[in-house]
Image (cartoon, rainbow over all chains, first blue to last red):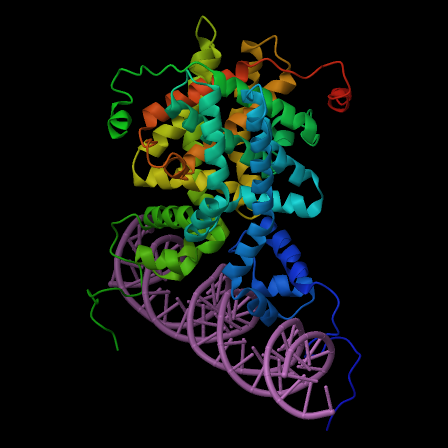
Length: 238
Length: 238
DNA sequence: TAATTAATTAAACGTATGTAGAATATCGGT
DNA sequence: ACCGATATTCTACATACGTTTAATTAATTA
């Protein structure tokens, strides 16, 4: 009872080559995870939107977690790679980089990604929302993907601001990260809060404004009395 | 076939008065929503942890959404109330407030909440993660709870910084919000990135550091050429 | 060209989910 | 002492979930 090689719709069996199904699943997963979060997205949803059987996701990625990880690393590692190239270039150069140049190099790969089209935009949102996802996943991915590059930039900032307490620089780097992640998340809060007077959709302008703000913050004087009780605990640990 | 008024474990029927079950459910919901997000938390989980039947949540709050909303508003509105009291006081005073005083008044209710115990801490996390939750809920809650107070602070900053373009102030307020939300989320990133050298658990110190950074950013000079093409679109809309 | 490997679908398993209905017991007012 | 309103549990429904197994077909290798 053999059927003729059914050329209709969808049938089991290996397809006649061609399209990059894995890439397609990654694209769809990126989109849906970005829009609804990890827990809010089902494997079935992704499979349906990709026009593919659910089981295929298990086959290619092992599990839902595996798919998320693959989605995240695909572009996350690319961003970090560029971030590292940029700091390599800055540090090889004479004169040494300014604070503004360092911050710009740190941010630009992110906002280029955001600008690059719907996929990049979705990824940025996904990334900005990572710390909402189940902790064991979020912790590991953040550490695996971002830590190295961020430490490089902290070290470079310490060299560029030799008179600033390294502790201050580490804190301020966290503040900086908070700021740009919020902007990446595309929360569209600007529109509400300014009563639709202002426009945050011009990314070049947004990055310029952020640079002004962040460089101002990084270079601000510290009002902590270094010899007082305030930092005693932390200093004792060094 | 009437049973004697069973005094054992749990039985249907109105209980013999006493404990604030609604408050208990809110507390447990707060804790779990904060830890696992809206989609990651099930009504059953909350009911079980509260030692209560699932149906009771439907009875008191209508739906899962209703419970989340109640959890969020309970402390969210309290924070905003305090924020408004503080700015009322500052604006009634002579001389008028400084930038630092305004930012401090905006932040302090949040970090007092975070300091206030496990419930306040959970709420802060929940709040910082709100923009990850299903959009229709997040949008409405943010608008209902925060918009009024934030607009008041933006207006006050415009008065305190009369030579700064209001557009810049609105943007920078967004940057400020991104920074403090990231710190509220308790991401514990500081520890990883500084290789455990620094301590972000002293909240007084953290707020002082944030104030230095944020005031520096708010007061930084703007590098946008106001007459150039960069802001033309936004200006035309005013 | 035969045998093996790779990629896909179909179907199902067991469990978890949000919500609703019915039963029950206590409270507050009369 | 009664009665309606209120607060609670029990039970169940219908659906949605992540994963697994078996069947099926093309590609690759021998």
